[in-house]
Amino acid sequence: MDLLTIIVSAIGFSLLFNIIFKKFNIPQVIGYILTGTVIVYLFGLRNETDWHTLNHIAEFGIVFLMFTIGLELSIDKMRSMKREVLVFGGVQVIATGFLFFAITYFIFDIEIKKAIVIGFALAMSSTAIVLKVLNDTKDIQKPYGINSLGVLIFQDMAVVPILLMVTLLSNSDSSLSELLIETVISAVIVFVIIFLIGKHAISYFLKFAAETKLDEIFVGAILFIVIGSAALAHYFGFSYSLGAFLAGMVISETKYRHQTQADLEHFRDILLGVFFVSVGMQIDVSFAISNIHIILSILAGILIVKALIIFFTIKYFSNNQTAFKTALALCQVGEFSFAVFELSKANSLIDPSLHQLLVLVVVFSMIVTPFILKNIDKIAEKIFKNKILESSLINTDELNNHVIICGYGSVGKRVASQFKAIGAEYIIIEKDLKEVEGGRNYGDNIIFGDASKKVLLKKCHLERAVSVIVAINNQEALRMVCEGVLELTKDVKLIARVASFDDKKLLEDLDGVEIVYDKDEVAKLLVDSSLICKI
Image (cartoon, rainbow, N blue to C red; front, side, top):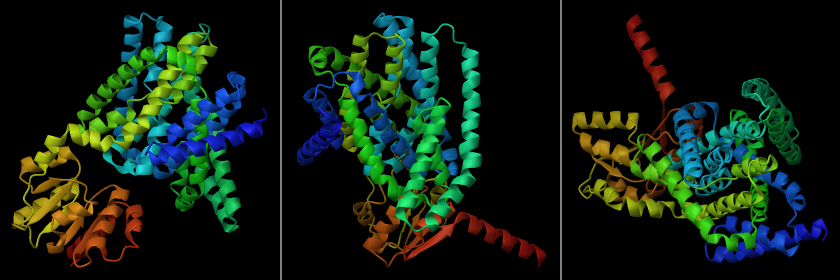
């Protein structure tokens, strides 16, 4: 069967499955995976060489996904995510890897080298599925979404030392010190080329491309940057997606960020579809049926163990609901484990039957993930229902001539403290349950909820309020809250505090919003103080 027939059939099956699944509200990822399995058996593509090229093409779905994530994260924002990346991500990978190693080695009596590889491969989560769903639902901006993103970034970086470890375990002649030195030198070179040299070169390159006023030239320039950065990272031993992620961060600092996002969205989605098809192609149906009880038992154990580790890691820094949602979002095993298992099999670290069992466990965990993410709010609210309701039991009916404060961060707390000092009436809306509990203990009039929800704003009697103060650090949420208030009424004074120039620009097109920019206000105070001193 020729390649064109296979491609046309794959497109046809994926459309058919997803049209049917859409009627039953089943995630489209499942349709792509099922397409891959059907194509393999329909055309007899059981030989790995038949779809090895497809796997390379499919990997670029993750490349473009990580690039678009990089576009959302400026260097300043990455600095603010040190805790999520280094602490949450580092603890999760190390703790999960060692625990799965211990279980594999001591309980299942698997050889120590195999156990180490399996343990750390299972510590990986699915960047492709988790970030796609979080982007589609806009949950990437929520606390659990930010936590998930931070952990996934660390996991992506951890793939490099894990693959090095596989090479080292399979080759006794390899020197650990030499491999580490090579990796550090490579990391420095990649950083210098992409960030220091590339930052200026990319900006000028995009400027010239944009000046042509030809869409195909600009899109071609972006594709060149993405694929070039991915190839550069891969040449120095890192993953394609890590190079693309760094390139995205560089472009996020330029004025071409939003146009780039719009132009590449469809490339990303198409290639991600190809990636999920390639995942489905790795399913051996006969092996899966004969070992389904083993696969499901291992899968259940992995999901529970990973969820518990992530929950208790994040619980210390956040509320139970955010920690629980993060744990549910990341409890699966991800696509990077395929690369680890494939390299291990090629180096005779794991045998073919164990390789197929592990691959099927990963695939099944990826199939379950969209359903978990789709219902994550319902699951979390059901488990923490009593606590949430208890924190929201405040009578709002008597509110009148009051101020609504959206956000209980450092600024929100200071504003509330000032209102309390002068005896003014106010109510605070905060969606971090831990902050809500702290505010209630401090005596503040605070309720749990999302301030962007119009129902909640109505419950706080927005129509009777004097003003609304929005003190939220999240860009997406900041915009949504302001839009929600303006849609309900334009008679209430709306004040939005912004911490960056990007936040300020985000709100400038909204009529009726008084923007208070931290740096401008500090500058005014400094000027006023200096003039007073002079007088």
